[in-house]
Amino acid sequence: MIRLTESRSLDEGEISFSFVRASGPGGQNVNKVSTAVELRFDVRSSRALSEEEKLRLLALAGRRATSDGVLRIDARNHRTQEANRQEALRRFVELVEEALRKPVERVPTNVPPSAREKRRRKKKMQSGVKAGRAPIPEDEFEGGSAEAGG
Image 1: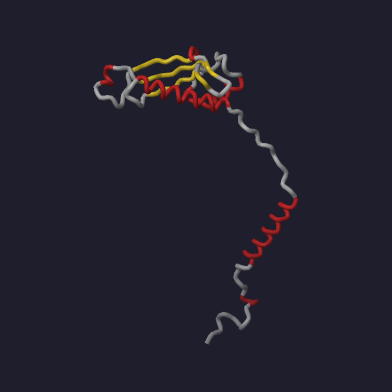
Image 2 (image 1 turned 120 degrees about the vertical axis):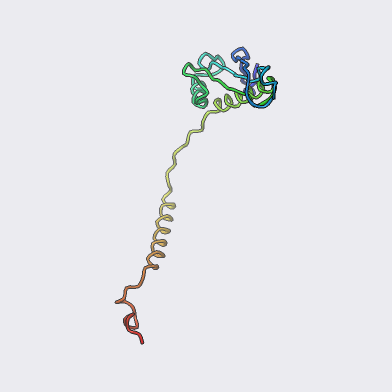
């Protein structure tokens, strides 16, 4: 049994592993030993997940899920088959745990009138600051015209 949460676990019989030769680290060992791991889990026929959780898992899986609802996780970073198997299993459990968490729905709130009033006052003040940056028209300029010099 694979433990997902304190109260939920998944039967290991629902998961299958296949091993293939991998490229990458391992030297000549790569040519002789099948170290890459592909974990397969049929989401749609799982008895451990509810329909809602299955949909969330398939959505989270993205390209890792086939059109038949089979989740595939490849692990080929390590030199040994067992390390890759553990890596695939760890990633699978993380993905399922995330799918089991129910998303928190946002509760819309109303903006209080005091906040609206504060925003309006702030906008009025800012517009006053910007208006004060405008150049002074020539006809309002005291001291004669700008051309008269001496």
